[in-house]
Length: 109
Image (cartoon, rainbow, N blue to C red; front, side):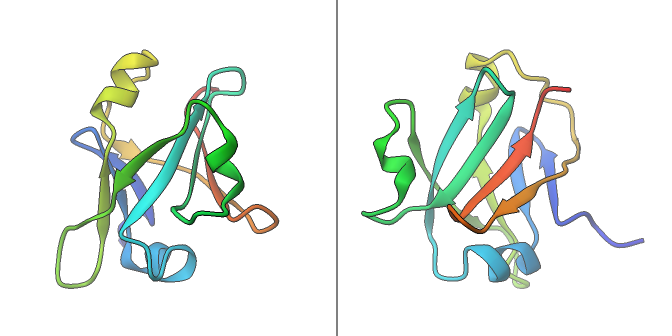
């Protein structure tokens, strides 16, 4: 059985090397925003002109290299705690918004 392309593990978002290559190929950092109203976490590439820079609640996170394959993680402990989100290890679903270059991850049902 293959590993999920995106999962929460040890309060880190773990992105597979396939997901990184497809959506964040040159990124070493990302912009992150949690929309409390919709319960969706948004992740976009950290560029000067990215539309997420206009949000007052956006934060910058490093994409930490985890293994030789190129999997990367984002430490989101504070984001989970601040927004009272469940820190349980689990696979995560996501949608890529190609219009805005944002990975959208639903955290709340």
